[in-house]
Image (cartoon, rainbow, N blue to C red):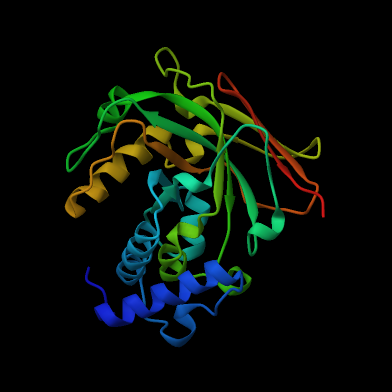
Length: 266
């Protein structure tokens, strides 16, 4: 599927997203004016935005997947995930404290992160290949954010906006996956000590490792190999949760342990 946008149009939209990132002021959805835009158009915009951020000195530490659960795919009328880069400047350690006003409209999600021990590439990457290339899994939290006003996103809008990336925190404990099934990893997610969601690894495309294989195959036609050391965020295990100043979020995973993000008080 090819983009409906010209290169100039895609670059213009990317610059609008870049300005939103700089100013902290969200923009109207691209699809308000161009409802015909789809996934290919979103990636055309994303490519220009990523290049602009790389030119500013950002480096890619990994990738995040979105829309990995069936309910989210049905909500946006798609049958596959989307993806965007994770920049090194947005990766935090367990216990990190972040300011709410560093984002536009932040939400929190608990996820399983995959750390690669070897390079991984498509086009015929399988779940078994992904497991073999994996150093281990980590407990992770993701702050998703939208430069699109009021989260009024369609597929094209969120893809263009780097799959609504914000920041991630990952545990330092990288757990090898020999001897257990990532699909069965249970998770309890709390905000300020109160349980707000639960989930399991199977929420991510039925298998977190399947998301990694999917990503390697999608990147292959672009000439991109997932390098050793990459962090792959495999998708939310529950619905995203609003964030307020002073909130403390914690996810406790079977085998992987806990991960915490604190939001600074105003």
